[in-house]
Length: 230
Image 1 (cartoon, one colour):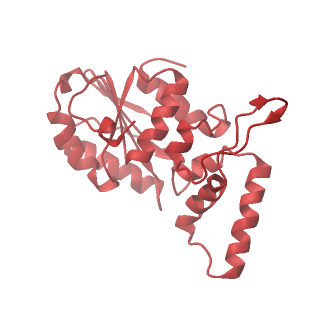
Image 2: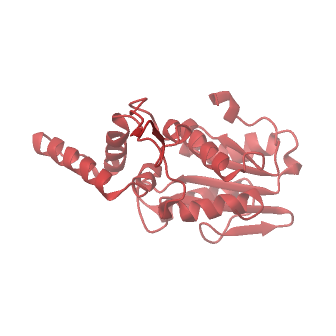
């Protein structure tokens, strides 16, 4: 979907998921498609972490058919502190006079509106969506990535901690997506294609194993946002 497809002018679903940017939107669109929930959740990007507050107070509440909204989910990276990321979103919700949950991943209900907040990769870790995706990879895949990163580090300055997850994940994606398990043609696995994809583009290409335990919590959270189990 093009970027304009993730802008919000009208509430078209009972559930709305707010994400940081376009790549996050593509990632979660692919995830919801795999879950069979694309008709249940509308995705909108706020165009950057600092914009959650203005988006909630302005764009969302002024959108056509806002009164239709029953379930609202906000999701963002933990960055340096998961607790600070959670508090930032709660502050944005409070400023917009919307329900704010007491804890991440839990639902706060006021009248007919249910609101929940998810922080990636989780509330016990730092960093981002890329870190979550790394956790879904196989050990041998991670080993190859680590060897490359170690080599690069030996050749020059080390990679800053807050950039390490992104560096590792895009190292993995640089060679092109690995075909899905069992995807064979004439007895041989298909060749790698589309080197250098971003996380959301890789999701569209079927790279991520949505059944991985790494995605269990976010998978369950998305199902609740959709209004039913998976």
